[in-house]
Amino acid sequence: MRHCLMKRYFHIAIISLACCLTAACGDNTPVVELTQDNSTLVKENMINANRVVIQSEATQIESYVNRRGWEMKPLPCGALYWQTVSGQGPAINPEDTVVVTYRLEALDGTPFYTNQRDTLVVGRRHVTVALDDILQQLHYGSQAWMIAPSNTAYGVVGDGDRVPSRTVIVYNIKDIQKSKKVPSKGKSTSMGLLGENK
Image (cartoon, rainbow, N blue to C red):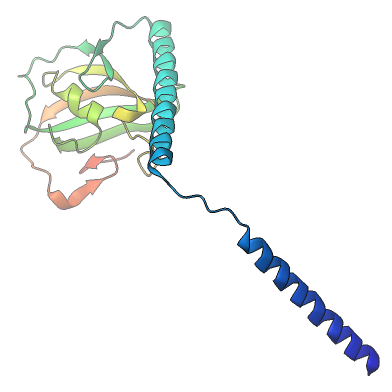
C-alpha cells in the first residue's frame, strides 16, 4: 500500500514539474510578428524564386529548340511556336468557336495527352493562355508545334490530372476546324470545354 502511494506521489510530482517547465518555456517563447518589412521581404523572395524558375525553363526550352533546329516565333504570352502547315481556311478570330486536336507532352517526350480534342471559344482562355494565343495567329487547317513555359500553361498547380506543377509543355497541334457547336458554360474540364482526353 505504501509503495503504491509513493508511486502515485512520484507520478503527480513528475506531471507537476512538466507543467511548470512548459509554462516557464511558454513565457520565453519569441513571437514573430509579420511587419511591413517582413511582408516586403516575403514578396521579394517569391519574385526572385519565380525569376529562377523562368530562367531555368528558358534554358531548357532553348536547348530543346536548338536540338531540333526549329525556327520558332514568340507569342504575346511568351510561348514559342513553329507553324509546319499553313491552313487554307480563313484566319481564326476571337470569339470563333473552334475544335482543336493536339498532342501534349513534356520536354523529355513524356506524353500527357496523345489525342486531345477540345471545343472552345477563342479569346476566352478556356484551356491555357498559350493555346489561346497561338490560335489567334493561325488559319483553319493549320498545324504547328508550340512550347509553353509553365506560366503560360498550367502554372503552379498543373492541370489537376496528368500535367504536373511547373511543367513546360509541348503542343503538337494537328488540326483546327471551325465549329457550329458553342460550348456550354457548365461543361468545363481541366483540359478545356467539351474536351476529350485520350
